Image 1: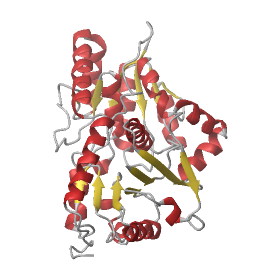
Image 2: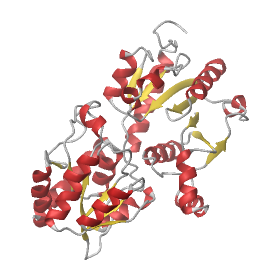
Image 3: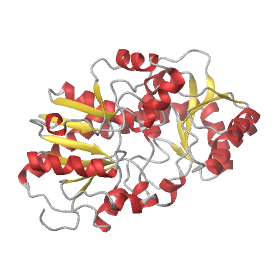
Length: 374
């Protein structure tokens, strides 16, 4: 089967958490013998920022790390869309594309007889619903949403006639427990600061507990403003900047635990959607403690796969317990790995995608966003 994927970037993971999942899914599809072509804008903001920070060597690092993965960088004004979609069975378009371009790809895919799916991995369906409402999905067969709450929003708003839940997951080819050195730091945080969407939460569940407990800690990520860097410094947290996603497993191996701090939108509105960092941590076998979030879809086993801290005080108590109780730490590692390997690998998600495509072949009628026949 030939699949053509239009995503923000395969090459860059700079402030682009979905790159892990995309790379894992493409690798899995290729391993199963499918013909996969990935297109990314030549001016994608993630790659632009990565090149500005690290130069062309970053692309060489990607190519050396992922020899099976290649993408075509394009300019939407000059790309021959008919040639790109020639003989394609399926086209999947990521929500970070421009609305008019999304609509144009869907229309062309419809005319050429391709199955077309729209993939949403962000919170804009609720935080920027006005923009999302302008995207014409009438030529798409449905939406792949990375959580039930997002899928429900598409149906509720009449933006699409069909939506399937397609959660992110871990690429177990690369995300797995690694041998750890005898001497390890206590805690590592891997995540971007962003637009103050979780500033208070990071202070309560990361910075203050590290400071109060006097832990040896490191932080990786981008878009940290000056005041945030000051807070890390005051807490004794070593800020180390951007971390290539493929180096996350060995970074986890050099630390004894990690924390998960979801953004406010996922805590308050889009229940049931964790960040990719939870899948990464559990797959790598590092004890995880999470700030509160509602696992509405029962993806994990709170208290078994990971610990939940409802406030900063609980975070301190859980961190102290994990760092002093070897049996507890070992149990969290074992149980978290069990859940990831049983339910949340990119191989599982490819199985889900292929099942969706099979169901569409059985019911091929495409419906417009308003629910009528296209």
